[in-house]
Length: 590
Image (cartoon, rainbow, N blue to C red; front, top):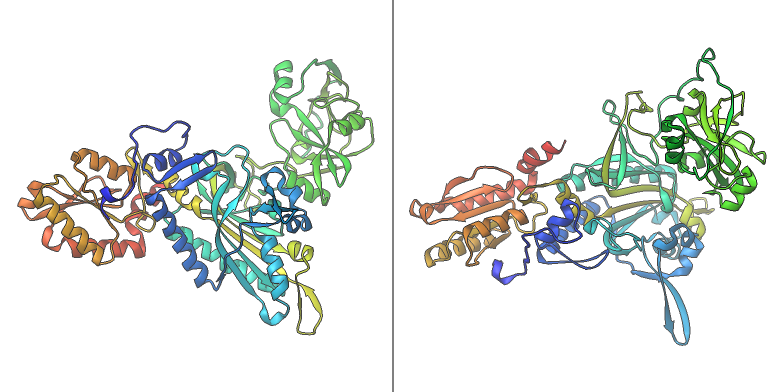
């Protein structure tokens, strides 16, 4: 391919609205074009890289025994109503109504395909002899991101690989889950990603167990809690905390008298700390939730946040939500912002995080408008019904496995695997006839990869001040040939190299533009082609050309007469191992 015959609209300046490296560089390198907020066109170079990621995903899915199909992007909204995911997704679910034959047909733009695939299997799989089976697709998904940002990391339209496995028993599901987990490790490894598998919550997908595959990155929107000793890792929605927190405060420490204070318009922890000149860890937040429609008070330290997934499990609740203003007023006697555990208007359960157990003389809302209590203490002033781990884990908390202090890292989610159980097969009546001819519900697993996020993840973690640094596995072209001048001799050599390398199966782009060498080199580094071959007048006089890996500082001269064979061998080896990229780039990330 010649540069002049394709479309590579590189930019010198940072585009307006681009904030993080992957967004800036993918726009500047001419990989993508923004059509609207949350929607991007993949330009020729970006499309080539995306297709390479797709090929790796497809190869590993096929090798893992998965069967590919292709489902619709639109499906009847009734399928989502049967699984109650219209409510679970909320405004994220893009809905429409199609006028057909005088009727209105409600449809959804699929954010995932659990409903459609389960409905399909319910119609065509009826016997244990047909199970297990894993079906997958690589398909566009749609989600109404309220605040799309960060380029293709958070969009309303994106490319996803989603696979679904169907089983007769849990043992079969566990076997497939392990196969898929291992396949994901191979996929992300082949793509040159530094990935971290972490324990995760299932969210609106549902299910019993799940792992996310994360790319550690300063600009990641997810937080991952990690143990540096035993390598335990989980996202903050799932992360457990070692032990049971502090013991009760020393009984010998003085308990001050309870004091009620007027606190007009002091609604937040920040307001409380400013008003009393206190620190957040000296304040207890009281949040009123409704667990299966029953109000409950939840206490956490002022510098902590309630983990609703942990709370839901602690309460064994099917549904959990923050109480509405009317419920809060009825339960506490005060408007939002002034709830506390002392003197609640109604008798409700009080669940306190373990950290509250070690506090004395703390500040809480007084269950009265514009009032707070100072010097509140356990047992004397109120009694929790239960102490439990109901907060998000943070840096410095003990690991649940080895008690080492954990750290928190930002990360980008690129894949997720779930053990779904029977959430969808129950709702959509997907059953099978077992060996004893009894009718049983099919058990499911679900496995997703954000294919477009693979590309963004590489760019976000693999770049320097000059531009992107691609691994050979995902680079839009593996080799760029740059003649310093476009005179007949240089172009003849360049075209011969291009044609012979292409004939050897190497992906080559020839920069045939009549531009200064500096312009060509800058564009080459910006796009990030792994190997650059420079043809200069002095080198040609010596029968040599210059070869430089994108991630290496210094070039080397190689003989022109053996250049094709040497370059082809190097690229072929790097395709197989990725060792040069891994040694130079991946090792530095960790």
